[in-house]
Length: 213
Image 1 (cartoon, rainbow, N blue to C red):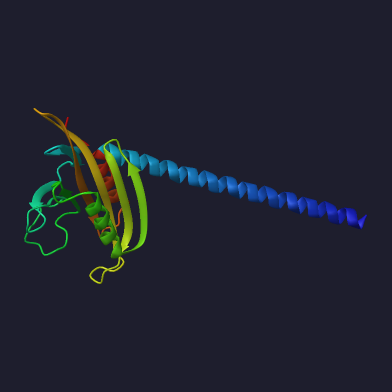
Image 2 (cartoon, rainbow, N blue to C red):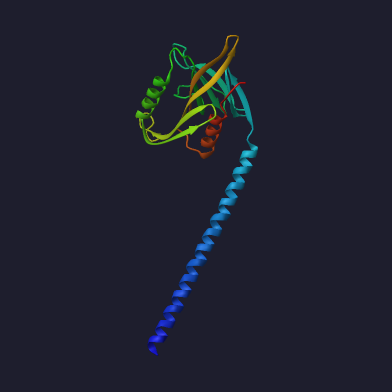
C-alpha cells in the first residue's frame, strides 16, 4: 500500500513537472513569436520609409539612399581607378581619413590593367589584414560577388568591423561593329561601423548594380 502511494505521488509530481515545462516552453515560444512579429513589423516600416536614388556610370547603374551625398573621385595617382563616396553627410575631401564616405565603391574598368588574376590577388591581399573572416559567394544575373565580413587586424583600427563586396560584373556594349563583351571589377566597402541597418543597406546597394540597357 505504501509503495502504491509512493508511485502515485511520483507519477503526480512527474505529471505536474511535465505540465510546467510544457507551459514554460509554450510561454517562451509565444514570447519569441511576439518579439519576432514586432521586429518584422519594425523592419517593414523601415523598409517602406527607405527611398532610393539611381546613379549611372558609363555602362552600369546602382541605387543609393535618397538624399545622401555622392561624389566620384580618382582613387590613385595614375587615375586608373575611380571611387564613389556615399554618405548621408556632405563629403569633405580635406578630411584626413581612410574612407571619404560611409560606403565607398571603387571601380576597376581598364581591361588593359585589370583581369581575373588581378582580382584574385586583390582579394587575397585584402584578407591578409583581417581576422574572423566570414566569406560568402553570391551569384547574380550579371556576375559573381565575393562578400567578406571580418574584423580589422591592422594596428590602425584593431578589431573594428569591415565589410566588402568584390563584384566581377559582366556586360555587353553594342557598337556599329557588333556587340563587345566587357568585364568591370567593383569593390564596395563599409568600414568600421557595425550596424545591421547599414549592413542591410550595403547589400541592397551591391545587389542593385545592373547594366544600362
